Each structure stands twice: as structure tokens, then as C-alpha cells.
Length: 451
Image (cartoon, rainbow, N blue to C red; front, top):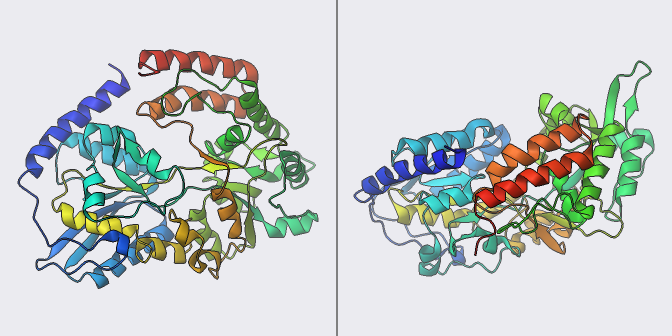
């Protein structure tokens, strides 16, 4: 039996119990204020507890707690109980709880970063369309394509908290010591590669003391989009692998060349020392590609850094990641009115969006917040916050796979074989051909393309 079949059967079994038990567990409260108005919901007569599942570092958890505290201050009848798990293991824990079939196991509101489509199709998540219509929740302020990507079989099951925009973080002290010019929005791949090699320090005994670039598994794929390449010909209903196309192969060979020349760390080496953020903070690399969530950690460490847009190839396009974690509602939530009131407040211009933004934790999903002083004039690093808006206003935001079987395909076929290239164990072109052969077989077995 395949991983997919086991996963779906576990979800189905768990869901049957969850739905049965939830039928008698919903307690009504007074209707919440319309989320689009950004006004506090009126206090309900009875005391309400909303369980909220999140992950995050110590700094991110502090922000989640600040958000919960603000909501409870504005809604004295509501208690927000945070259920925190570190990122490693967070989504495995969710899968285990769903498979157990206990409707009280999952929190009412969940911060979800993986398996969104699977949970939606399996009935674990509450469709939000009726709640959005009932409260006149405003969807027009979201960045382009975000709401489109939130739909599964025509329904919206989650609201994205932020854009997982990637920026080029650079260590200003390292650049100053090397006498190198800081990155700017006009940089090409050639400029980037030249700087990476200039900032790489290899000692006479062969020890690598410092490298130019650290780019984790998955981050490098932005290069594919910049060349108009990708893993697949269509991210939602693919018919074939596109990784061996000439423009896709250009990106693979560019990144492989940086690693071969020691100008970029291998993803495996990055993982061994704790990831790109750890390498950056330890002074092991001069540049990384990361989102805004790492800024509080770098600020707490007193690092001298800034950000710039990602360099693009000559003739390429500026693109960025449309992904980002979503707030979703458990379909077996004990009090759906209260859960929706909190979830929609998390997305409010004067609610969670404002608090997360002012704390420097994210790039806002709402355009009005991203273009406000709350973000652009935030008095903490990075200084060049306009770079985020440059990236968000790209010609197109991208995703490489947005269908239920994508994670399985990526984990089993694409990433393990790409790691062989990055590790210097395999030649790029031949390995890419092998990947595409296996991907095409996988797509056919799973009925793609679908009518």
C-alpha cells in the first residue's frame, strides 16, 4: 500500500470520529463583529476558550503570545490557549492527532504550513466561505494570487498569515572587510556569483573559513522561476516534468557551479550546522536567502546586516514565493463562532497583522499593511524594507506544486536526487533526466493531468 493510501485512510478514519463527536460539541456565542471592519467583536455572555496551535522559535512564540494577549484584552470573555510545538515535529504531531480520531486532539485554530490541500480534501478543515460571506470579510486587500491558491475544489479553507517572501540577507561587516559593494536591486547572477567568490575564504591548509552564499534545500528553486523554469509544466494540474527543459537546467547548473567552486555551502552542510540562519549568525556565510521571520533573531544577536532583492539572471524575471503558512479552523472546533472571530481578527489590519508586523516577524499578507509606516518605517533592522515590497510587486509570484500529491512526489523523487547534485555525487544533466523520468511515471500513476 502506498504512503498516500495509508495517509488518506488514517485521515478518513480519524475524521469519521471527529465529525461524529463534534456534532454535539458546538456551543453558540453571540455573533462576532464583521472582520472587515477591524473593530473588536462584542463580548459574548459566556466564557469561551479557543485553543490555538502554533510553532516557532522563542522569539516567534513571544509574538504569538503578544497576539493572544491583545485579543484577550479586547475580548475579556475569551481565553486563548496556545499549544506550541517547535517546527521540527510540528506537522508530524498534527498527522498523529488526526489519525487518532479524537475531535478534541486538534486545536480550534491551527497555524498550518504543510499538507493544506490534503487536510482540506479530507474534511479535517472547516470551509471558510460561509463565514467570510456572513461577516463580510474583505478579501480584496490580499496580494495577487493568494486567495486563488487558498481554494481547494472551489472552497477557501485557510487565510494566509504572511507572504513567505525571500530576500537576500547580507552581512555588511563581511562586505566592508572585503571592500565589496553591497547588493542592490540591479544585481544579476553574474554580480552575485562574483561577490560570492570574493567573499569565500579558503585557508592555505584547505579549510573553508567563510563562504559567500548559504541557500537551503528549496530556497534555490527561486532560481528556476527566475529563468521561467520549474519542476512541472503546471503547478496545479501537471502533465509532465519540466526540470530538464533548457531554462530549468540553466538554474540547476548555476547553483551546482557555485557549490562546486566552494562559493556556496551545500544544503547538507547547512543542515548539519543548524540551517542557513545559524550559518549567517555564526559568520560562516556572507549571504543567505531567507524570509522575514529570521530578522528578530539576527536583531537580538546584534548583527550588522541588511536585505536586498534577489539577483536575477540576464534576461530573467523578478519573481518570488507566493507561499506562506495559513490560519485554518478545525472542522470539529468546539465553538466555531469563537474560532472564526479569532481567526479573522488574526488577519485584521488592526489585529494580528498589525502586531506581527510591528514586531518585525513577517511580511504582511495585506497590501495596505505592507505599504504602511507600520512596516516600511519600523525602527528595527533590516533597514531596506522597501526591498520586500519590490519583491512582492514582482511580475509573478510562484509556486512549483500545489496539488495533494506534490509533497510526496517532492520528498520521494525530486529533493533526494537534487541533493546528489548539490553534494557533488552526480552530474546535473543526467540526474535531471532521471528525475523527470520518475516524476512523469508518478504523475501518470496518480492520474495527472486530470480533466
